[in-house]
Image 1 (cartoon, rainbow, N blue to C red):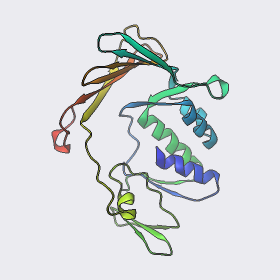
Image 2 (tube, rainbow, N blue to C red):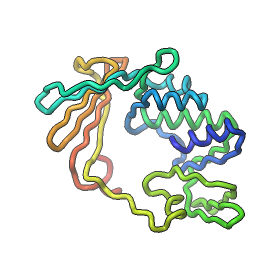
Image 3 (cartoon, rainbow, N blue to C red):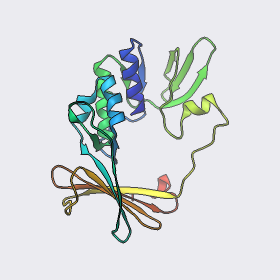
Image 4 (cartoon, rainbow, N blue to C red):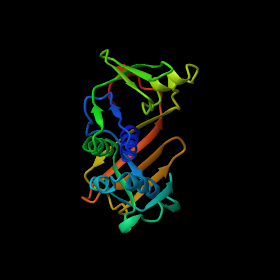
Length: 223
């Protein structure tokens, strides 16, 4: 999401950019997230708020419970932005897809399926070498390539490696929201695990859980 957002900001400032994306296309998969009103204000400044709002649903509060079902508290997700729009919950992949579509529509050179293999600074410009051997040259490279960033390593070879923090996250969608309060996240805190669920406008519920488990290796498959 950070890559297309930066490209949109550069386009509004009149700066040409190339958006390099490792994946062949933006998959309609993955987890959900909630964009708070300050994030929505940023999207409004980029001119993409309406496009993003079309694929989300409203979230007003975080409601927190203990493992015994006792209500621990309620926190507002913040005041509405323009037109009464409150925080939005949406699929992460759909947010990335909308931002990328908007960037392409505004003239950004979007290149899917382009993994970055190396980055170097010549002194006069910066060069990015892709996995297929293509070399891109520019005045500036902005790394938005995650915890295993190739760009970060080029800037600081001594940067710390990513480390597993001890929690595995997984989630899904159920067909019945089981009476959950609408427009709110419901969090349950156990001694070792953490659960969250949010009803959708069509009566279903998205949910996730964080549990302490050993790290999952790429060879272990999907769980």
